[in-house]
Image (cartoon, rainbow, N blue to C red):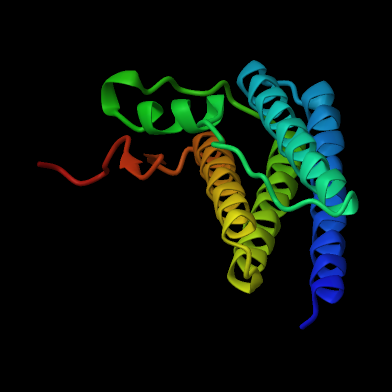
Length: 176
């Protein structure tokens, strides 16, 4: 593949990614406004902030490629969500979410689907990419979207009261 075709493919992928991040950002802000649970509102706001950061990063890379420059990439530090998710999984740090409503569950399930699709997209792009820097950016974004997915799933599990929170059993019906 020639350099021009490769650049056009990269720009197409970046435009698709930017559009996806914008959709996520808009959806999460909408969900934050309509969700009754404060923990749900906070989570959607954090997700929206991350999506905005992803969008900015992708726009910078797109702008560089449009100017005929190479991928720059940066060290993408762990987001607030990535820093919180592992800590929340420990039994001592666990805080029960407020009980949500069916509308909250609908929003969470839509968000879960958005995050799964975003993570899958970034993994596919990373696997296709020949530029090492671009590959690293896509794989890092896939990791971040996966942490969003895990956070949303934990919120759903908590609302559904299934007995697990971040994969940790909250209670058992079996006697010891």
